[in-house]
Image (tube, rainbow, N blue to C red):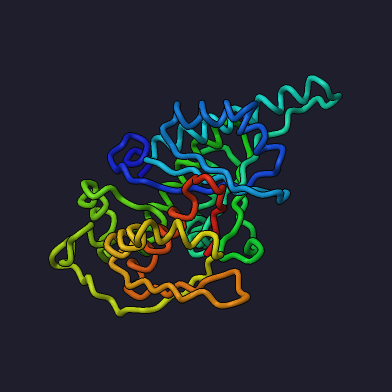
Length: 297
């Protein structure tokens, strides 16, 4: 499976999120933002860092799989450099491993662990990295932390394998990765169960002969008021684009007096809903002058 991802045979766009302490975030940003700027330019990935004074921040990395791997490599090597520098002022003799914490939807953790722990064991053995999936979900979220430790090279190999698992989970569940329209046929080779989504402006199933109409269901999200603007877009352009791309019906409730949040109701197939959630999250994560944060559904 790895060759399909790492050699560009299946070039899809993924979003991977990392949980970082303030000191780690400072290292990634660098003086006057120079380090993160260089990472963005050299990897080709979008790297967004949540605002706020929380002890922990979310770093969102979005792009084609090869760009994501480059960004992860740069982050892993930067952290190793920080460890080396800190050891020069310390009496420690053994070098601690580089550690990254991914934020992964709980629905995908089963795929990552595998039956009886077989998949996570395989990843550990083939990459040499330590991988731990948290038993509990992160506070106020439906996601778990996945901690990866090891040398930068081991971490990069590990992230590649985790991306493959996410792509496979996407193929089955319609979650997390958004294929480029011209890559749908390749993705279909993985996704034999249902159409991932209907391409922009197309109302018929993307792949004739598939059951493209599983029962519709409804999902509700609560969004902070200050993020609604970037989800709706100017004169509703953004929300209309999300409706078209996802194929889902999306209703945004009116603002309630005294409430700092708005309710969004998404109706459609599980794949439609997953894609709509992803696009809403991506819209709210876009950098803008007001420094709005990413929300978690």
